[in-house]
Figure 1 (cartoon, rainbow, N blue to C red):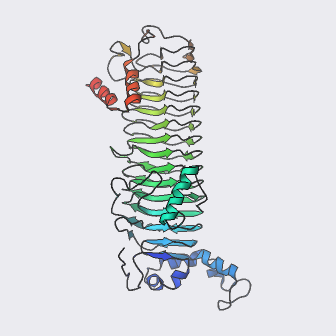
Figure 2 (figure 1 turned 30 degrees about the horizontal axis):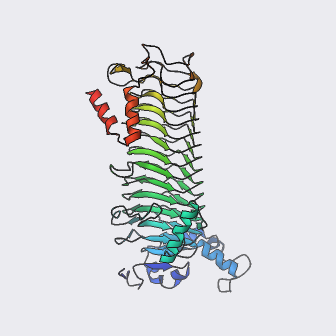
Figure 3 (figure 1 turned 90 degrees about the vertical axis):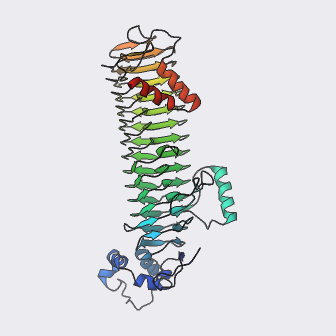
Length: 500
């Protein structure tokens, strides 16, 4: 890479920072030319600045002990004016906007116990690489900020790859790294943690990247008050990442067509917690694949083009008190081949297909949810799904918008819709004002669902639903086609034709 001297201080385009030493030597001229902001904050953050000489009686000219020198380094901040690699613990701060060259990762952090404060400055790249900049699912391509152990040499890269393949999840990498208060745009990953434990990403903005924020094989990190928007793929991506907490983040307007289709994406990531995040206006809101024992609470996932929340082959997750409304073409909360999940006290209203859908999903608990004013599949749909519990749910005023409760002689938009599903049970459910009646049961056996005080155990009566057990509804046929082919265009075409 070409070296560029900065304001005559003789430092190359990329520097390697070694704690406070570089501040006093190679970067002394650059620091002296700064606007003084970092120096002012150093004085503010250093308790000795107001106290004068140290309490042990040493003057500034006396020799300090190793412990005192460590304390001094801890409170100082090294300022950064160019793309660089950090290899020593300490506190670092941007003093200007940074711009990376094509193919370059701007800030690399290769050691534990680092705080990088962007001070509101931006890190810009030339844009995501093509086709996607990721040689494998666990490689990061270019990044605005990359936190990753080691130097990335050929032998080390191979060893890391082998290690990832052998154990799959978070490893003995870096720890206690904080990245905060900066903006990143134009990279394969805006901010990426790879093998990082007990770190944090806070108050950052990630836009115009392929992935906004990525956690790869990283555990027990906190993402709080970040804004990941207008990224080509996922706004926030977790892969083989366990025990992390995502709180009060915004992940909006991500996942463009023909790219990865969800704003927040979990792949083989377990025991994570999502609280009070805002996920709106994406292709799909939140998607989990092979991810287990995660907890979602109090998130808003609305106005996405397809589904709000999708769980695929994901078990023992808990979704509680989330708002999943107005997803314009498909389903509010969708479970596909996902078992043993708890869906409790969520609101899933005004979604185009249905509020909550279980497809080939068994032994889930749906308790106290509201699924009102959804589309042609109705409030809550179970298709080929057995031994689920549905209690205290409300599914009112669901209607297809077709102007008739039958479509090719089959009923649409019931409150509860069971198709080829068996041994499901539930009590104290409510379904009123639905175009297709309170409940439709087609096929299956040994169900026992109470709706509006009536216990339904058999295929439902003519006039409320199709009475024939051996015929399936048109809407369920469409769902089956989606599962078998992965093509959702038939769903969209059906909606469009029916609304004309």
